[in-house]
Amino acid sequence: MGFSPPAILILGGLLLIIVGSQLEVRRRRRAEEALRKSAEELRIAGEHDRLTGALTRQEALSRLRKEAAAKQSYALVLSDMDGFKEINETYGHGEGDRLLREIAGELAPIAARYGGELARYGGDEFLIWIAGYQIREEDPLLADVNEVFQTVRKSGMNRGRLFASVGAANAERGEAAEDVILCAEAAVARVKGGGKNGCLLFTKKMRQEELEAEHARARVLSAIQHDGFYMVYQPQVDTKTGKLVGFEALVRMQDGAMGPDVFIPIAEKNGWIRTIGRMTTEMTIRQIRAWRDAGLTPPPVSINYSAGQLGDTEYETCLQELLARYAVPASAVHLEITESLFIQNWEEASAFFARIRGLHISLLMDDFGTGYSSLSYLARIPVDVVKIDRSLLTTYGTAQGESFLRDIIGLIHDVGKTALCEGVETKDQYELLEALSCDRIQGYYFGRPGSASEAAAAMAQEDLFPKEEGEKA
Ligand code: C2E
Ligand code: CA
Ligand code: CA
Image 1 (spheres, rainbow, N blue to C red):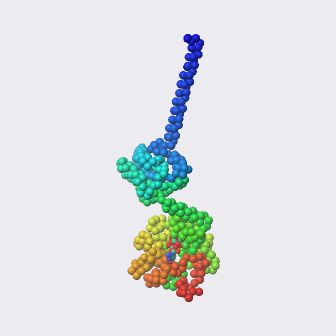
Image 2: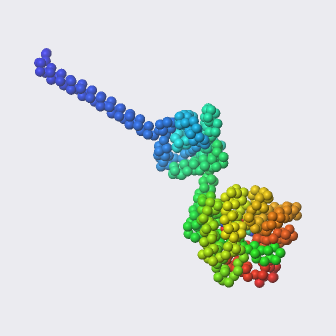
Image 3: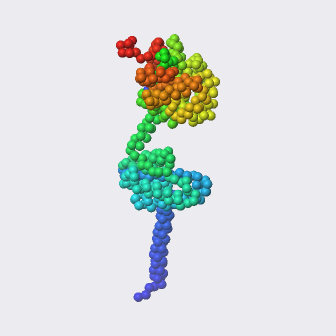
């Protein structure tokens, strides 16, 4: 049976259409495949750092957030190089890039070995995290990471000063990724603060400490912003007569949550001490005015001045303005300056002393004997009173130590200054200092720091010798 020519034509056409459409389908599939592949490549490229091949910071964060959402626990190790910037600047970016690639190349297999992932978290920061892993204090993983940097350091001529600070943290189930990273960063910061080059696991205890520190910081700041301080005044007496010769103004926090030995260092660390310094100065001068208005004649009140206030170059102007505003003479206040300030910033400090003396305000040296205690500079310093630290009294206020205290007091006298001993609590201590010719005394024996009205009561007394039992008014 044969086909008629038109039928052949029709069949041929159909065949062509079928083959053609199949070709079309295949071509479309191929195109689609290519598209998908390139999208995948793009996606992978977006997830990976181009230089090192590690995951990017974005990707790391997004994956860690997913771990948190899935309530998955994991361990995190963050490494931060010390000395990378120098290598980049001295030997060029080519060398810097090579170094980063090498480190990523060493870290990636470690991450893989523990079943974790590696990301380049910042310029020279790498992050490894391992799902379901609990890192321990002496974890081999930390040793392995440390080893990488040692190997890399030794592999290049210019890398002698390259070190890494490594911080680790464990994520609790569901804990926000950002919080866990913060812990690892805090661990890195501690390693750096402790002289760099090392590993540290951020423990629960450290986290607790950090939280408490943050809490304390917030409270101090709030006190600064909401007038949350007041002053107390501790008497200073003449050793022989027991008469009141001065007060030390000491700051307190309104809510009593912390003592000044805690909040003053916090303020110093956070750059708030200048503000506090001005606040305590104003409160004290305002109080002197109030006492005077009440018909009292307060002895000089010494205000504590912290080393951190040296940068407050307008402090003297502020002090002068306050004295003028409250009509208080310069002789009514003294400034108490810690020994370390004399030593650490001699140039700056002596310029400051000159300006203070220009205002006719007396200086006291606080905490004598706790710092450097070179006695040679004592003569050069324009202070009128030297305060012997309490620790010297507790250490040397015994029969054996007595001669040392005698020498110190003698030395203060030799350079023409007044000796004041602080922290005198007992009759024995008082009698010893009296025998050693210490001029003045401050301490619980004569009076604790008290309110403005308690200070006023002290002003009214003939002397401040403690009353024997039965003698009390
Ligand atoms: P500091 O200047 O050495 O002050 C003396 C500290 O010894 C005061 O503690 C005082 O209450 C305490 N003290 C006095 N007598 C005795 C005693 O007989 N026995 C014992 N155990 N302690 C005694 P406070 O008020 O807690 O102040 C601690 C530190 O906080 C001060 O040491 C000073 O460095 C700082 N500070 C206090 N008030 C201010 C302030 O207004 N400004 C600045 N910058 N620092 C302040
Ligand atoms: Ca003081
Ligand atoms: Ca002191």
